[in-house]
Length: 295
Image (cartoon, rainbow, N blue to C red; front, side, top):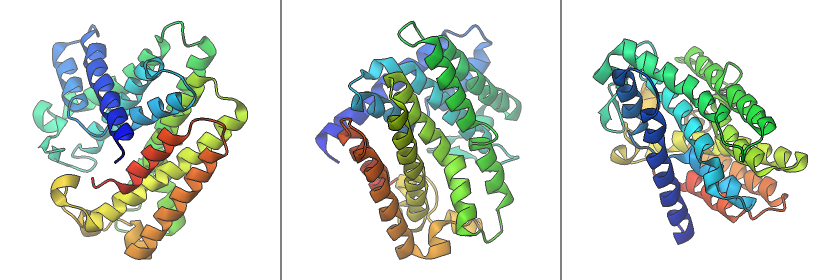
């Protein structure tokens, strides 16, 4: 990984991990609820979604700080989805990133409420952005992010994923799941940076096309790592998707063809970015990082 990208990711992560607890600690709410919210927010992770908010801002020459609270809101939504995914009614996971899952520590009821709180509070954070963000931009952000997280986005993708368990899905059905369950919130991260940067209509269109490719890149790489990744690094047993009878790119197409698809989507993503007159280096480097990561 190039030194510039390493420095950027470190800075991005530090900004988010300092700001997130400040948001939660400021809430007038029961301490046990705040503790449960912070437990999962502080559990680590790559903070990829905030990184794409910041990278998009920087590509337009806008400071990372302008997108800090929006990036926090997106990380809250991502975290809520993980808390709920881990519940017994969903994936029934006991561990996440090597730590007991939220419901194992706080009980199912409080874990559900902590997830609810993270989701709803994220939009309060956006509504309360300072005067540097116009009212029109706030409405655009709320519309973009709520669509990405809602029934036509992440939630719908999760439902389709559950419905597809123990079935042999077609490639189109798998793409639908990947685009919505994982891709839409990544798209919202890029588009949030574009909204805050005042991108024009053509720039928004190309960035949306780019970020849709990005979502597929992210998920195809996940599928490949499930076949040939390091169990310690990826945090789950290699082959768990196959053992759980989940359709993936490698088991639909074969591993080599899945890698070829990954390369095709990387190429498309770059083409969309290069069509925009912005400083695209950081977005391209970050896309390469997502495609070549080992966990």
